[in-house]
Image (cartoon, rainbow, N blue to C red; front, side):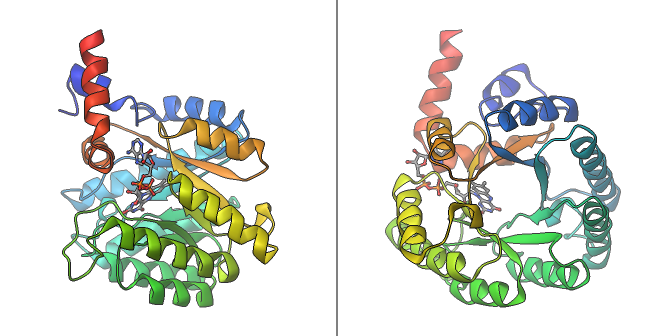
Length: 286
Ligand code: FDA
C-alpha cells in the first residue's frame, strides 16, 4: 500500500511527502503564514534495532535541516520507532542522542503518545531524559485515558511540557472513556489545569468548541495568548488555523513526512469517517 501510486495519492491530503526536502519546503510555506511546525518522520513499531537506529539518524538529519534552513519547527518522535519494543535501554539511548543534539541547538523534541501499552514507559523515559536535559523534551497526554488527570498534575509539577490531545488509538473500556462526550469533558478539565500550571502548554485539537472554551478560559484567568499554543494536523481545518493566527494566537501544525504513512493515515480516517467518502470522491474525479 505504502509504495503504490494509488496509496501515495490518497495519503497526500495528510502527509507532506516522502522526503525531508519536501517536508522542509512544506514547513517553510506554513511558516510564511505565521504558523509554526512540528515535523514527524513517519514510522512506528519498527521491526529491528537497526531500523530504530536508522530512524534516529533520520531525525538527526531532519534536526540539522531545520536549523540550516531557519525553519521554525521542532520534532516529534514515537518510542516504538526508536526501538522500545526491543530494548528500553537502547531506545532511551537513541532518544537521548537526539535530545542532546536538539538541546545544543536550542531545539525541542516532543515524544508522541502511542497506545496505552506504552503510556507508563513513555512517561518514565521522558521524565528521566528531562531530568538531564530540562526543557529539551516533552510529552503528550491523551484525554480519553482515565489516568490522565494524575499524569497532568505530575508532569506540571516536574515542569515537563505537555501536548494535550483526545487520543487516537482503540483502547479497552477499562483504561479509556468509551463515550466521546466523556472524553470531551475530561479534555476541558485537563485543559484548565494545563493552562494554569503547565509549562508552554499545547492544546492539540480541531474541535472548535474546545478551542473556543480554551480562549475563554485563558482570557478569564488573565493568561496571555503567548503563554500557550494551539496545535493541529497538516491537512485538517486550515481555515481554523488561519483564523486563530489572525486573532493573535500561536498555532503549530504537525507535519508528517516519509514513506511509512499507512498507520498514521488510517488513524486520520478512523477519526472522521467522512474522510473516506471525501477521498473516494477525489479519486473517482481524476
Ligand atoms: P474530534 O475528533 O472530536 O474532531 C473535531 C472536529 O475536527 C471534527 O468534527 C472535524 O471537523 C475535525 N477533524 C478531526 N479529525 C479530523 C480528521 N482526521 N480529518 C478531518 N477533520 C478532522 N493522538 C495520540 O493518541 N497521540 C499523539 O501523540 C497525538 N498527537 C497529536 C498531535 C496533534 C498536533 C494533533 C492535532 C492531534 C494529535 N493526536 C494524537 C490525535 C488526537 O488524539 C485526535 O485523534 C485527533 O486530533 C482528533 O481529535 P480532535 O481533538 O480534533 O476532535
